Length: 376
Ligand code: CTP
Ligand code: MN
Ligand code: MN
Ligand code: MN
Image: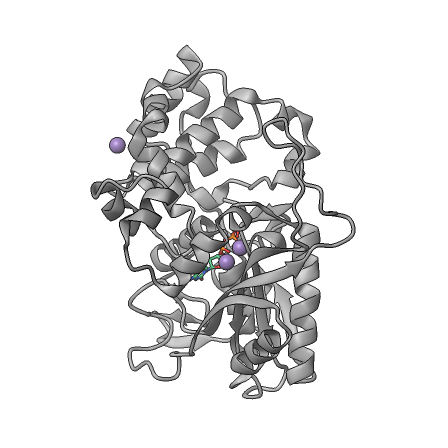
């Protein structure tokens, strides 16, 4: 593949597991600190600088050596004036006063709490904060009418803010596998999202479902959801139908970044396995017993026709920042429109077919980037 020049995709990404195997990286306290700082500033995003900070953090995360002086950062992409100011502060004073005061602010703390509710985004949280709602109790007392997602989010708040482990993701995978096989033999599932990138924990578990015969996947989602519901596996679900076929404007250029697959955003009721037991870790010095034999886990299901499967896998493996950068690269450098459905070559005025991620990277003129290096 060709060289990317000064571009975010130039950096090879380190997964958390790779970090663990590289003491030189994990002992780099400054760098870890810098990541946290820069990443958390996006909560104050008011003018689009959130993405800028995330890009900057991704570059820092990928550096092979400890940052001890500003001169090491010369020539690196995505480090803007504001990010550099924060980094300089950390290098000189051990911390950034701007970030520290941000993190101490009531507004920042409230944003973290409220956006931690499934179904609540930054816009809703911001509106509530302006009304004086800073925590869950104030939200409950406010009498605000919550939608179904937010109600479920509030009800399962603690569970959903507890990281999902790889073992739990595997257990969910077995349930989803059983569901699809039961309703349509021959169907296939693929683990996508952060777990496919090798992350050890996640905020949810993402699956892509398909069938090797084109067209057989039509109507599959509602059958899978009915099966899961009948077995008592779902605490909440919202299914959105496929709008891909209905679009007139061409599938590779949707109005938003959202794809049009049939999808289901759900909350699973996962029975706790033997290895987890029912004894919770010490909380405030007190050993608490959790009598529940289950926990709530966020699960995303997406159904794709086999003809679009490679694009869907690429699009749903993430990270979100990696996807954004990949699409930007396709548009700016190759005059192509990449989506989770297809890639459209504007110069040839046609769609390019692909049955594997490798082919898609080749179309984009890039060397194959494995999932473990997409943790931007
Ligand atoms: N995605 C998407 N459309 C959505 C939601 C997610 O295309 N409405 C894609 C994202 O672009 C990403 C992938 O689904 O590529 C996974 O998203 P998500 O589960 O939010 O993040 P993860 O990378 O899996 O991280 P985490 O471990 O926190 O879940
Ligand atoms: Mn700025
Ligand atoms: Mn995920
Ligand atoms: Mn997800």
